[in-house]
Structure formats: C-alpha cells, structure tokens
Amino acid sequence: MGFFTMWDPIYWIVILATMILSGGASLMVKGAFKKYSQVRASSGVTGAQAASRMLQAAGISGVEIQRVSGFLSDHYDPRTRVVRLSPEVYDGRSLASLGVACHEVGHAVQHAKKYAPLVWRNAVVPVAGIGSNIGFVLIIISLFLGGAQHVFGMAAGLLGIGLFGTIFVMQVVNLPVEFDATFRAKRMLPELGLISGPKEAEGVSKVLNAAALTYVAGAVSSLLMLLYWAHRLGFLGGRR
Image (cartoon, rainbow, N blue to C red; front, side, top):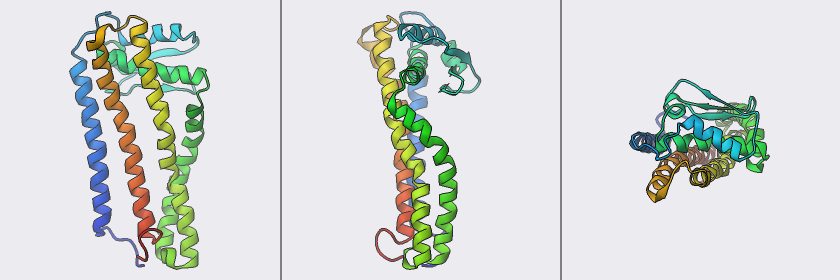
C-alpha cells in the first residue's frame, strides 16, 4: 500500500471540501447574526431576560444565566447548570440575541427533562474525544502494515476506523439535540410575547437555521474524512 503522504490529491480534495463546508456555514451564521442583531425585538427585552422568562415558563429552577466573553460563545453547561451568553446576546435586545439566548435555554430544558438524544450525546462526547485520537494513531499504524491487504494492518485499520468514527457518531447524535433546542426557542418566543408577528419570527428562524447548518456541516465533514481513511486503507474502492 505504501505510507500515506501529504501529496495524495484525494486527501487535499477532502480537506478543501471540509474547509468550504465549515467556512461557508460559519459565514452564514455570522452574516445572519449581524443582520438581525440590528433588528430590535418589539418586546424590548434583553437576551438574558428572555432566557430567564423561558426558564420560568418551563418550570425550571436552579439554572444560572451568566455573561461570558467572546463572540457567539453562547452555550449551556450541563455540569454546572449554567447558560452562558456572550455580551452581544446577554445584553442585546435584537431578534438575533433573543433567538440565540432561548436556543441555549432549550438545552437547559432538555437537560431538565432528560431528553434522550442529549443524554446519548453527553455519553458519547468523552468516548469520542479519546477514541478519535487513538483511532488516528491506529490508522497510521495500519498504513505502515499494509492496510486491508495485510492481516495485522486490517485489524489495526478496522479498529482505527471504528474509533475515529466516534467523532462522526457524536456529531450525528448531536443533530437532533440542536434541532430540538431550536424548535423549542422558535415555539416559546412568540408564546411568551418575546417576539410578535411573522417578520420577527422569520428573523429568528434565519439566525437559528443558519446556526443549525454548522452542525450539519460538521457531521458531513467528519463523514468525508472517515470515508477517505477507509478508502486509503483499502476498505473502500478496492486495493490502494
């Protein structure tokens, strides 16, 4: 098979494709957020206030809302039960701020209700972090041993692909988690009077839908890399 070199054109095609996917999705998120961060919600509340109201409406207590530094650094930490919002979202009164804030609260609601995909994702995350690193090492070892054309190379390759693929599994499991949090935000914002009318709902949807594409792009990128290594080791497309 020969050892993998950085001159493999297929490798660079895959890298380019993943860069286009992730870069394009990131630009869409930033563009949508920038546009709708300039559109003030009719309710006049801040992202932090919207998050607090959504938590109250869901009957959830004990979840703290904090301001953190960084642009679009918003996230929910299930370990400490804290919704962390970037300054633009925490203090902002725009459609973008309210949408992002309530999306993160959607994760807190999932956590409180033991939403199954969230439980699965949290279980897969530590496995994926370790497994993908070990898997890559085994893939390199498999390449040295001849990949699928050698019994030891095949064993190392199959195990390496399986472990490396845990990143893809995690990202696939994460998709329903993100989509559900977005759905909860879109539903609760008008129900609580935080936004009103189809125009405001459309603005929130564009911001959250753009954000959701980043997770889809991540999953597709992981799949492309996984398929590349399977091909390079000789498990797909015949002998390499």
